[in-house]
Length: 189
Image (tube, rainbow, N blue to C red; front, side, top):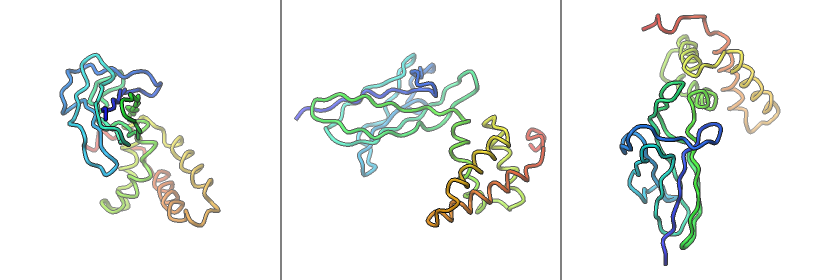
């Protein structure tokens, strides 16, 4: 039985190859392949400098691929996980895997509702607006933009009984964002 190869590419938000500018230290810029049980089947594979991809050799099967990028780009550092991908590869085959390296704005938009739900267990209700304001400032997102997105999401599931808990969390988080005080984040240090 011949091994399979995964040609793993990092991509930016415009689907362009995301070149690694720093040396390929495995603690900063890496990809790793896992089986579907969550067990690593490769070490952390460093992404070479001036490259946007790495090749991994694996037995035929189904895999989850993820990575981490710590790079300075024109908008500041991107420091965190890539999105994950699932790939199925057969004997002697080569498959391309594309991992999205999300900018902070994408992460905030995607995760603000879940983070505020989790924050409710950690901070007093009156501090949630500061938490939300900090996230929006870090992502460069205006409050009216995120209010529009969350409100649209809540309206889309308004009559779905099975999603009542999600609708409730969206509603609570919409209220939190509406309460955001116009504060200077830098002055709260």
